[in-house]
Length: 78
Image (tube, rainbow, N blue to C red; front, side, top):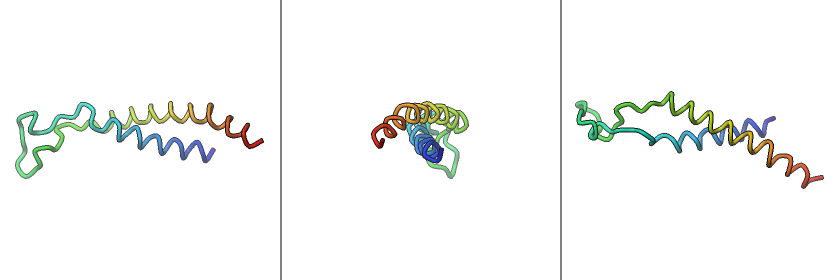
């Protein structure tokens, strides 16, 4: 159980970093730069949506790891 939690946390961060740059437009690209901010700052980062995608991806990765790799490891140690 602890192994599955660790796999989920690691895969969640991996998935989050994978989707962070998807669909992001900078202030410079949108043509509306707010004074005092960096031009490359995102206009709408959509973090909640990306966290949901990361959670979905982490669940898939965790299921694959738990159901495919863990039984294989158990068989190897027996």
